[in-house]
Length: 233
Image (cartoon, rainbow, N blue to C red; front, side, top):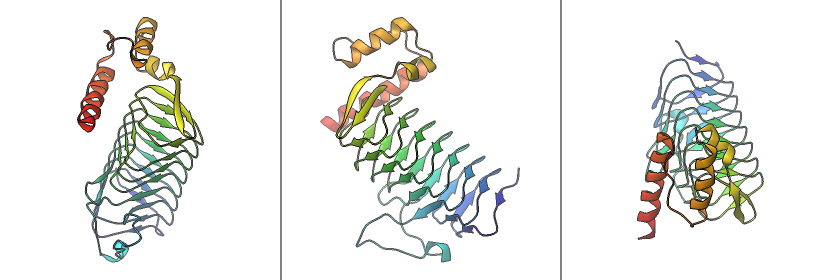
């Protein structure tokens, strides 16, 4: 399927587009940038501009200049109007598959946004932030640079996230603190009531990870444990 690119959109020369993408009016996409298939990119979205460093380089990407390590966006994402996604500096800035980035949300340099993530209106991700699969971040939330938001976590609107958000928790406030377990998110991933009760006990540090978790959930938690343990060493 051919891409549908509005004539007012600006696509830089170092941009690779897959198939079936929509790029709306006045959007700007500069490279290095690679975008997969079936993405909807709304009006005035800006993808691939330099990292927001006061003293950093600001090349004219839409005129063929490029700087940074790039942006890679997967498939079937919805990127609404005025979303901004910055170039990486040390690593590639990445957005996975099936994400929904609502209006005016911002993905800073070197961020990783995994699959099926929702960033609500006005969410701001500081540089090097990692948002894991299935996380849902509420309207107007700010995540401090180098933050980690665990798989399946739900962050309430207007929160200030200054420390790690654990998997499948409900977190809210300034500073943001966990207030419960995202039982709805876990049930949608196939967890039974018994497993949900055991998982809640596990998150409180009173038991081991329960048996019977769906494969995808277990894999995400294993990867999370590995990364977080390495960071603490």
